[in-house]
Amino acid sequence: GWKVVFNMGIWTPAGFHGEKKTKKFFEGWYNKVQSPDGDEAFVFIFGYYASKDGSDRFPFLMFLDEKREFYGYTRLCMAGFHADKHRYSAVCDNLHFSEEGMKGTFEVKEKGKRIEFDLKNGELKPWPVTTFQPGVMGPFGLIPFLECYHGIVSMDHEVNGYVKVTTLKGEREVEDEVCVQIEGGKGYIEKDWGRGFPHGWVWVQCNTFPTKDLSLSASCASVPFMGKSFPGFIVGLQEGPYLHKFTAYAFGKIESLEADTRSVQWRMSNRTHRLEVTAVAGVVGGEKGGEGEGKEGEGGA
Figure 1 (spheres, rainbow, N blue to C red):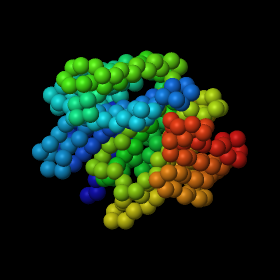
Figure 2: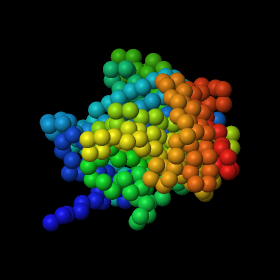
Figure 3: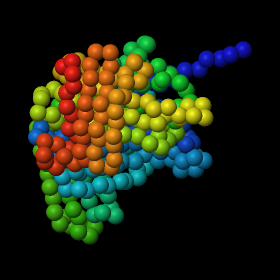
């Protein structure tokens, strides 16, 4: 007879889904931190990768210092890696990432950089997970054979701490050092896991608007499904305690979308609101240092 199998892990999007995945799998937590004025912005992507044949498995850390235009990647040791499957809590040797914050030190040796960080999170604002709406993907997240799954751990939260970027000369000699203090900063955390990323997607995220307590996460991708594909989109506008949702599975509609490598013009609607998003790469409020600019639409969104 027929057997119905659901993707049960979708109800715990913040947790680790790769415990038994030894082949063709990736998972990553995207952590963004910005100073209150948006002048400083850092991204930490902590993740796990398993090759197609399972011969290569390792955790990794990607780092972006936007203001100083530095990007770094380091491969980590599998023996020191552990992650909780129920909540966001992952460690690898001296690196700690969790809902409470992140802390550690690592080096990008080929670029002569050492990064030290200690950042504490305030109260998170996750995309709600309920019995019938399991996170951002809604009912689509229950399908067990999708290429990629997505989750939002926090739309917006306060961050306090520091990030220190040291430029090394030779093995240990310090050539330059920048320590950025983050006080009352803004944070955002999301998740992706699966066999691979979509072959085409648009993504915009911003939580440093002039309007206080406003945060936007918007993504649209080509979703392969049973030999074909369909456009899926997930957009959330956090306005204080309320989350405005624009999604394909909840009768949302894309009215227009124009995107290239430098900008996005996107207009969409749901049953009660219309939202227009204008995003320009590397610009927020006319100054370098952010990912996007959003404009509120009709209906008070």
